[in-house]
Amino acid sequence: MLKKSTIPVLDNCSINNDSSSPLFVDHLADYIAKHHNMVFPHKHNFYHFVLFTKGSGNHLIDFEKYEIEPYQIYFMAPGQVHTWNFNGDEEGYVVNFDPEYFQSFLLRTDYLSRFLLFKWAARPDCIYNSCNASSCCIEYI
Image (cartoon, rainbow, N blue to C red; front, side, top):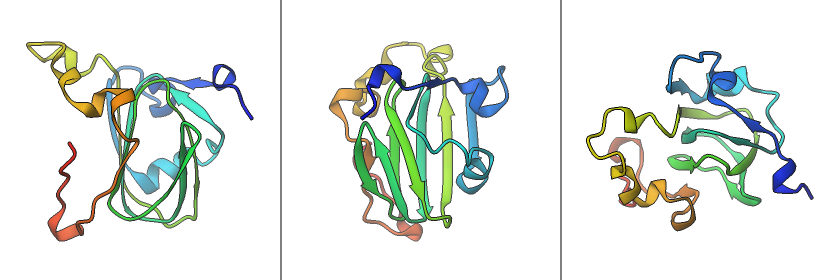
C-alpha cells in the first residue's frame, strides 16, 4: 500500500492548463477525456468538487471506496488522496478552486470555515442525494 506522504500532489494550473484562473468548471465527460491518464492515487492542492448525473464505477477517496451512482456529489479538500475507476459512461460536472478563491471577495475570510463542507475531518467525502434530476435537493450543505 502507498504511504500518503509519497503520493504526488497535483496543482490547479497543471490540471486546468491555466495558471491565471483560481476557479475551473467543466463537464465531467470532457474532464475525464482530458485527464484519462490520471487513474493513479494523487492529491490536489485545491478543492475538487464532482457531481455525477450519470455513471458507474468507483471513486477511491482517502482509501475508502465509493460506488458511483447518479446525483452523488464528491467533495475533496486539498491534500486528500483519490483515484477513480470509471466505466466510461460518466456525465456531470467538475469544479476546482484554489483555497484562496473565496477569500478574495468575502468580507469575512473565515466565513467558509463555518460550513462542514470545508472542514475536512468533519464531513463525508460523498453526499448521497435521493432526489432525481427534476427535483435535486442537497440537504447536507
